[in-house]
Length: 268
Image (cartoon, rainbow, N blue to C red; front, side, top):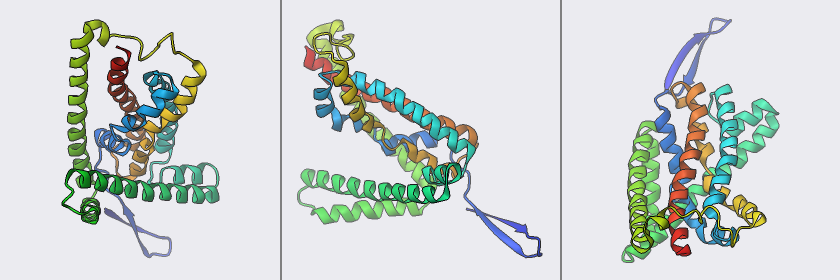
């Protein structure tokens, strides 16, 4: 954090505290992808695929277009108001300070609930893998680690995001590779380049796809978190406009690759 000393009209000294602008565009993109989680679409696969009648890839791409428009709006507001606060700042300065107050509290609830859910989910998963370690011990480990990483500053958080993203991409990449290999072994090139995950004439229904699209949009929840870092970003008017859009684009393409393989297998 930087401290800027300025003078006032009455001769007193004001200390204006500012956050250091140390994050680049890729730091924002990594942060946004971690917030969304690269495997976000996997948890929605069963329901969305059933509702869309096997067209989840299509619903993901349609939702991506809508969310990218929203991301452009967020990015535009972030470039106009390059300060921390995200929706709280935009609503407060763009509409009304009282409405901004309400938006801020709603945002705060989101940022409180999501870490709790992630801690519980991660702890339950590790208990299944290592049942000898009790649940509360994993909770303490998760909370302590997350707290220490945040206390060390935004640079440490950015580097941690890069490491976690690399690990997740390796795991997901291995899954995609093995799925492609299996499909090719069963059905050759025709299986890999099948259009059925996008359009299957025997099950296509526009109403079902639109219904599933509203559900698939949950895959992109969290991209707006990058705008909370507006005061710690280099060249915020450019980077805060690009980052949310690129995060949504990456999520849409990467999620479609993950879902394409299971749907292709189901159609064989």
